[in-house]
Image (cartoon, rainbow, N blue to C red):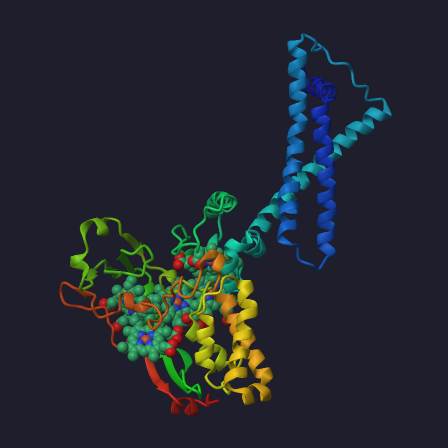
Length: 484
Ligand code: HEC
Ligand code: HEC
Ligand code: HEC
Ligand code: HEC
Ligand code: HEC
C-alpha cells in the first residue's frame, strides 16, 4: 500500500470509528473548555484585576484538565468502538469511502484539522499558564489559607515582598521544578487530611541550597564595607525612656584586602564551614569544621561536646553552612513583642508621649487570645481602657494617639501570632544577631575551641564596632548628622 493510500485508509477508519458517544463527549468537552479558556485568556489580557486564587484553581488547573481529558476521550472512544466491532466480527475489511468531493465532508475534514491545530496551541498555552500560576505568590500564599497565612503575612511585610515564593523555594531549572511539584502534591494531601504540623516546622529540610537561589539576586563577593544599624529601645517606665545603640556591622566580602568580614569569612570561594547540630532546629551547634582554600581543616568543639551521648550524636544533623544558616528569616521574619513595639515607637506609629505605653503594649501583646478575631476587638479596647482608667486626662486630650497606638499594637499582633497554626512569639528563631536568640553565638560563644587552642572569636569587635550602646542621645548620631 502506498503512503497516500494508507493515510486515506486511516482517515476513513477514524471517520468510521469516531461515530460513538465517548468520542463525541470528548469532542464537546474539549471544544467547550477550549472556548472558555480562550475567552478567559482574552479577558485576562484586558482586565486589570488580579485573579482570585480559588478562581485560579478552576481556570488554570481544572479547565485545562477537562480539556486534556476531552482530548483523551476522543481516541479512547474510537479504540473501544473498534474493539467492540472487531469482537462482534463487524469490523469492515474496507472502510466505507469518504467522498472528498462532497463539500460537507471537506468542511468536516477542514474543521477537524483546524481544531487539532487550535488544540495544540491551547494545550501549550494552558500548560505554560498553569505552571506560571502554580508558581505564583498568590497560589502559594493564599490557596490553603490558614496553613500559609503566617509565612505569607510575614513575607508581605519583608524586603522581599516583591520577590515570588518560587524564587527562593524553587529557583531556576527543571530539576527543582519537578521536585517542588512532587512535594507540592504531598503537601496538598497534608492540607486535605489536615496532617500538616502546626506551626510548620523549621528548618525546611529540603530547601534548595541557598547559594543557587539567593545568588540569583545577591552576590556575596560584591559585599564590602560595613552596614550601619541604629536601634532604639524604650524602658518600661512612665516616660518610656529611650536608649539607643549604634553599630557598624562588618558585613565585608571580597575586597582588595582579601576575604574579610562576615560574608568574606563564611562564604569565601574555596572555604567551607560544616557543622553538627543536635536539637533538630539548628539552634545547638556543638561542633564546627572549618576548611580553608588549601584544604587545611580546623575542628572546633564546644565545651560540652564531650558530654553528648553517642546515640544523640548519631542522630545529629551535619550541614554545610550557607546563606540561610544566618539569614534563616530573610522574608518570614517573625518579631518578638518588645522589639516590635520598640520599632513601632521609633517610627512613631506608637506615640512615645503616652505614659507607660511600652510596658502596656508588650503586656497586651503577650495575652493569649483565643483567635485573631478576638484580638481584633480586644487589643484596641484594652489599650483604650487602660488610658481611660489610669490617665483620663491623657485619654481626653489624645484620644487619637491612643486609638492609633491600639491599631499599631494590633497590627504587630496580627503579623506575628496565628493561634490556628499554633504560631506564637518566638516560634521561629532568627539567627541574625545574638540578643534575642542564640544566632551567631551558636558558634561564636567563646566555648568552641580547637585541639591546638584556637577559638571561634567572640570579642565584641569581631563582628561590629559598637559606636554607642544604650545611650539616651548618642553623640555619634549628632556627629553623623543623624540625630532626630
Ligand atoms: C527571600 C527568599 C524567600 C521567599 C521570597 C519566600 N521564602 Fe519561604 N522560606 C525561606 C527560607 C530561607 C525558609 C527556611 C527557614 C528555615 O529553614 O529555618 C523559608 C521557610 C518557609 C516555610 C516553612 C515555615 C517557616 O516559617 O520556616 C514556609 C511554609 C514558606 N517558607 C512559605 C513561603 C511562601 C508561601 C512564600 C511566598 C508567599 C515564601 N515562602 C517566600 C525563604 C523565602
Ligand atoms: C529575585 C531576587 C531576590 C532573591 C532570589 C533574593 N533576594 Fe534578597 N533582596 C532582594 C531585593 C530586591 C532586596 C532589597 C529590598 C529593599 O532594599 O527593600 C533584597 C534584600 C535582602 C536583604 C537585606 C534586607 C534588609 O533588611 O535590608 C537580605 C539580608 C537578603 N535580601 C537576603 C536574601 C537571602 C538570604 C536570599 C535567599 C534565601 C535572598 N535574599 C533571595 C532580592 C532577592
Ligand atoms: C555568618 C552569617 C552570614 C552568612 C553565612 C551570610 N550572611 Fe548575609 N548578612 C549577615 C549579617 C549579620 C548581615 C547584616 C545584618 C542584616 O543586614 O540583616 C548581612 C547582610 C546581608 C545583606 C544586606 C546587605 C546590605 O548592604 O544591606 C544581604 C543582601 C545578604 N546579607 C545576603 C547574603 C547572601 C546571599 C548570603 C549567602 C551567599 C549571605 N548573606 C550569607 C550574615 C550572614
Ligand atoms: C556554624 C558556626 C558559625 C556561625 C553560626 C557563625 N559563624 Fe562566624 N565564623 C565561624 C567560623 C568557623 C569562623 C572562622 C574562625 C577562624 O577564623 O578561626 C568564623 C569567622 C567569623 C568572622 C571572622 C572573624 C575574624 O576574626 O576573622 C566574623 C566577623 C564572623 N564569623 C561573624 C559571624 C556572625 C555575625 C554570625 C552570625 C550572624 C556568625 N559569624 C555565625 C563559624 C560560625
Ligand atoms: C559573631 C559576631 C558578633 C559578636 C562576637 C558580637 N556581636 Fe553583637 N551583634 C552581632 C550582629 C550580627 C548583630 C545584629 C545587627 C543588627 O541586625 O542589628 C549584633 C547586635 C548587637 C547589639 C544591638 C542589639 C540591639 O538590637 O539593640 C548590641 C548592643 C551588641 N550586638 C553588643 C555586642 C557585645 C557587647 C558583644 C560582646 C560581648 C557582641 N555584641 C559580640 C554580631 C556579633
